[in-house]
Image 1 (cartoon, rainbow, N blue to C red):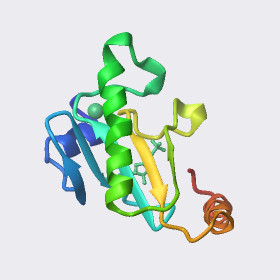
Image 2: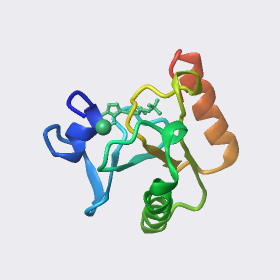
Image 3: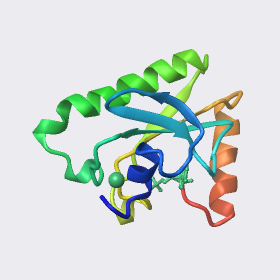
Image 4: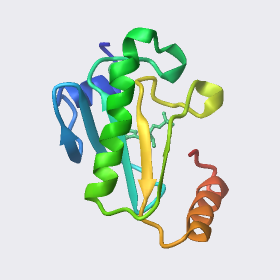
Length: 125
Ligand code: AMP
Ligand code: ZN
């Protein structure tokens, strides 16, 4: 996709803070982190979002989750959350499938506070 930001990141036309890369997926730091650790995991192939996936995407969908799990282990995250924002009403701003991996808070109340703060600033999660 010509004008897709994450396609450009996947092709290294735009720099990112790379965490992991192989033939199929890429993981990089979110530019506006919600939490101490906020990593995006994307397929290199352009897929609009979880709302448009087909049966043929089964393998890449598994790979995104597996990659998130490996990164969380490598970062020694004790607890974390993984989510996809799906569609405009679901809070999706970039229409290239991406998994959010967030963690690094000390306990759940701290995470709730991070979310509260972000929403208070008028930001999205
Ligand atoms: P979403 O709202 O689910 O579409 O999430 C898009 C995410 O991409 C947001 O958390 C943004 O902070 C993040 N983002 C936008 N531009 C960049 C970029 N150039 N590099 C890394 N993350 C980005
Ligand atoms: Zn794309």
